[in-house]
Image (cartoon, rainbow, N blue to C red; front, top):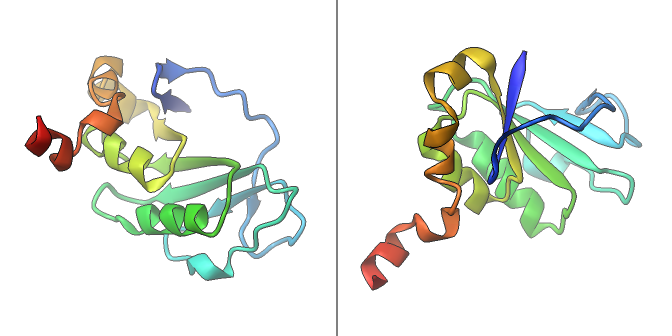
Length: 133
């Protein structure tokens, strides 16, 4: 099972439509994107509601690049990081454009909600804010 994390902490996942693997359909309302996908090859459409980007390990940052690319190209739907994202990476995930993070239950047990909430005010957790403050 998995745990969904937002700026409010651990929340119930309300997405019930499942996912289509990138490359299997051009008219999907939701996509699951592997971390080695080429961002420019992801076709954006008006029916695309959710993109879930895989993080196979916490050391693999390619998902941040994919997310940022999608936002710069105008994608406004839900964007979810999926997999091994650490609480310490939450602010970066939000700044890259992710709306939420889906983590395995064992990771949620090791990094409880309070660790994620400590980074929920992600706009204030960057080096520029600390330098100005």
